[in-house]
Image (cartoon, rainbow, N blue to C red):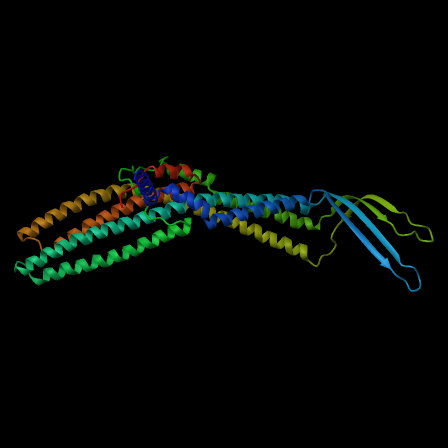
Length: 433
């Protein structure tokens, strides 16, 4: 009996842990392990790292070995077997293409590194947006269910009043139409909630039964610092998209220089060792081995116009990179200014929505009182009822807009970190299902 109680207690604890609502940090950590977009950027970063090492190898010593085995079987003569071995080492002394290619590869790695770091910040934002989309859908469904129950009670009351002859059938029809409308909206909200959970599952590879809700006491404050130009300056300095654009321009410049260096000579020092075990010729003889040292220079005299075409290609690639950098800078400026304004607007909107709820509650109470004394009709009551629940939904949406836009502002400024999600995570609370 004692063992059975222990096992039952453990089962209850395990069930409670599985039903515990997921929080934002859990969702982010799951996404960090499973997100395909971040994995793609990681693979691209490693490709760029390997390409940089390939470019480095063009300036490092190279050693090659080759061998030649031959068997000659002349008619009427003895067979002759020859084995020749060659070992050669080379060190580039001067190569414009190799030097600029190495620098361009290093800049290309800087581009890939900035893209990966930007993808990390983007994942922070995408995980948060997906999480609060679920909360937004849950609150929307919750208020619609409450509105449906309230209008259903109103419908039952007017039916009872109609049965005893106190009101006309038109009031019943008005209440029924309002009930059918909110019921249809509630069904749509149920589907939207399921879709939001599926979006979260796509991001994390995990299925969640519930997520923690946002504490109503979470402060809604203006961005810090409160100066818009400070945010703009931080974005121009820290934004990783701009870092990518700058590195892309430098990579294009170095690539163009490398293409132009295709007309330059390449100079290398070399040494080789050759050995041959075949019999020496009858005339003059032949040594068994030869060691050679020297310096060789090569220059392309004509390559079918390939180098000139590469130079033109590099020129247009540089023009593209510079135009892309200008476009990215203008976009970042616009996004930073817009998001700063939007977050400040969200703060005021949340405050206004709170007042709208209080006003809607007072209006509903006054309308109900007027309906009871005959100065207001059922349509007025239904409109006031729906206005209250609409105000509650708008307030919930305004709070989520504030949270997400604040994260977006930090993201465009290049300062969104895991610490921001941890702080936000402290304002999430589990509720009873």
